[in-house]
Each structure stands twice: as structure tokens, then as C-alpha cells.
Image 1: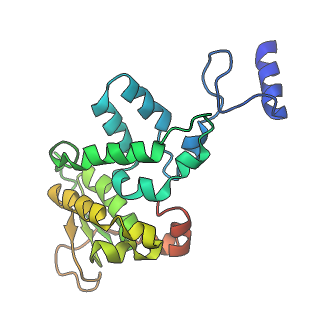
Image 2: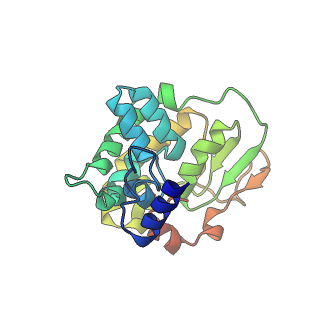
Amino acid sequence: ILMILSISSLKSSGSIDTAGSVMGGKRLEPPACQAACPAGVDLAGILQLLREGSLLEAQRTLMKYLPMARTVCRACGRCAGACVKSQPVGLANLMDWLGDTIDSHPEIFFIPPSGDSRKWVALPSPPVSALSAAYYLRRMGNHVVVLNDGPAEESLAPFGERALSLAHRLARYKENLASMGVLFSPGSLTAWTGEPFHQVLDLESRFPRTELTGRMWFE
């Protein structure tokens, strides 16, 4: 008990580094890189899996948090900026590479769901946030329709020139979504003539575009 109290006291006083481990135990707080990641990706867990040679498990772990890593990780880069290592790990580049290995194998990571919820879900906007949500909703067996769809460049335009350079990656991700059954429509909600929607998730009404931009469109 005294040891626990002593550690708590040191932590509160700032005398110990809470990002590291204490006496070989578990971390007191998430690594700085993970705390900086807007999606909260388990970066330390992924690195450990890669050290062990478990590429598939590392890929699956990344997909739990971020299905479009190849589109956004390099543009974000917050994890690398927060690294406290004396020789920083190129995490953004590593996640970018891992995302590429995922996008290259849609037959493994973007397969249609085995079940069918019989529910139709519409994602009107904003396009980039909707594309991230579309993956998880489809995995749950929902019929997902991304409305107001347009060229990848148009979706990335609000995030600046750096994001625009990733348009070809976003286009590939959309192709992978389509392979698992996500539908894309250039029209608006009122123009939709297909199955009636059980739910309309308008992310832009909940999170203003300026806020989404500040969070690198993760929400």
C-alpha cells in the first residue's frame, strides 16, 4: 500500500514520467503518441505485434480504430510529433505503410458482412467522416449509402493542399468500401429513390466542419 501511495505521490508531483513504466509494471497512462492520435489508435500494441512478427494481427488492430489509415495518417502525423523517444519512431509513416498493406488486400479486410440487419443507413455528409463510419456500419450488416458523393479531390478540399495530394488513396479506399457493399450516390437525401432509410446519420450537424477539420476529420 505504501508503495502504491508513493507512486501516486510521485506521479502527481511530476517527479516520474507517467508515459513510461514503473518498476517494470504497466504504464500509468497511455503513451504520448497514442494520446496525441485523434483516433486513439493502440500504437504501442501494434508495434509490439509487429515486433513479434504478427502482421495480420497488427493490421486487424489498426482496422479496429481506423479503416482508412493510408488516407489520413501521413496527413495528420500527430503521433510522430508527440513521440518522447530520444530517437523518434516514424509512426505516421509506419501506419501509412500498414494501411497500404490493408488497402492492397480488400479480399481480407473489406469483405461483405455475413449477416444482414435489414436496416438502411444514410450518411449525407461530411464525406470523409462518413467514409470512416461507413466501414463500421457495413461490418455490422447494415446497408449503407453515402450520399452527396463526389470526386475524392472534392472530399479532401476543405483540409488543404496536403490532404489533396492523398486523393488517389481516398479513391482506392472508396473502391474497397464498394467491394464490401457500401453504396455511393451523388444525389442528396431528398433525391434518393431506393429503399427507405431506417436512420440518417448527419455527422456534420453534430460536429461542425471547422471542428472536424481541427480533429483531422476523426470522430
